[in-house]
Image (cartoon, rainbow, N blue to C red; front, side, top):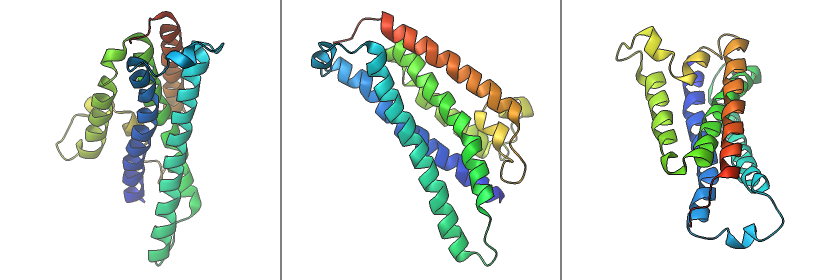
Length: 190
């Protein structure tokens, strides 16, 4: 079951990448001038940003769910003692706040400082390296706690701890609000 938890981290990184690429398209299309015709319609900037964020978030959740269910189907087909679906569901549910956190960081950067939005890739890569290789390189416990994945690394074996879920979702909501307010106030870059 520990291996399934590691796979959950890898699949979450892939899901975040897929959703972040959709949300990043907003800034790319803005810079290239593709949104000029869209901005002549009566839709607000909130509507435009919400469209990209919803598509990115839904894609991320679908990718995470599909990879977890495919892993369950393939794993249970080859195991002599199949694992129950509840373990896969726990990993899926535990990784949703991490997914929301990284997508909201990206929205915050797009809204406030769009040229620095690539920092999200550095943060995601750093969090993955800390979670995946942290114990191998003997990182201290305080350094391991920097990664959001650390708080859910024992999830398939243990229950989900509610405290990290609450503060990750709270941070995600705050960053999302900052991103929306910033996107509404800043000028388009084309």
